Amino acid sequence: MSASDEFFARANRLLDRWENMLAGRAQPPDWLHDAYRWRHDRYGMRLVPVRHPHRVALDDLLCIDRQKTEVVRNTRQFVHGQPANNILLWGARGTGKSTLIKAVFNAFVDQGLRLIEVEKEHLVDLVEIVDTLEARQERFLLYCDDLSFDADDAGYKSLKAVLEGSIAAPAANVLIYASSNRRHLLPEMKEDNRDVHVIDGEIHPGDAIEEKVSLSERFGLWLSFYPYTQDEYLQIVAHWLARLDAGTTADEATRLAALAWARQRGSRSGRVARQFAIDQAGRRG
Image (cartoon, rainbow, N blue to C red):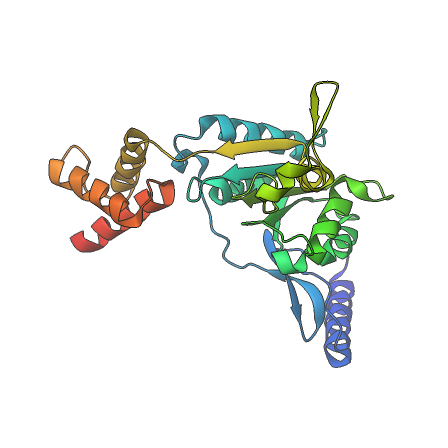
């Protein structure tokens, strides 16, 4: 392309964006970025670039080796154009579910992987999002954080349809990675278990339970995360103290302070361990 052709092409793109703004329509996505958020604003529904994505290294995630291995393997298959599954990461808070998704994105971003954050209230737009991405050459992870639903949420059915419930074939370049504190994404009530039937000695769940399980089982890969033991918590504290040059758990006073910090928070999680290390680094200046 000559210099004049390139100039006119850029000018036409600018004119198109200006016309869209005047008409109140969403601008076409700027595909030069690595990460995006799906947003609703006065220009409509659109992908907004994240100019400074949270860069997380896989080596900073400790005590979840099994989960990390599975997510990396599945993502590598996806990036290389091989069959791969949507993933549900569920379990205790602060155990690295969301951070693992960010870390695996960071690990494969140079191989064409892109990340799109979709908030719960925008899941009703999943079909539009997938249609926007389907013709692209890149591979996209749709990232849904802290996902849970009430029974009447509109996004519930939209997610089911995009996962495996639509007459349209799933997009080959899109996967959904979701994190949740709930295994089945919906509240599980005591009353649901009263609808269980026993037929020929076998237990058959009632309709309410079947409905709640039907969404989560559409994720091909489930990974569970459990609270850390005290030793695992201290291992993560030691890692972040070393990373931030903020001391060591070999020092008894620092070790006791880390344990007291966890007791005050009521949690021995990776998040709490990192927050303690940040606090220690700040105190040391």
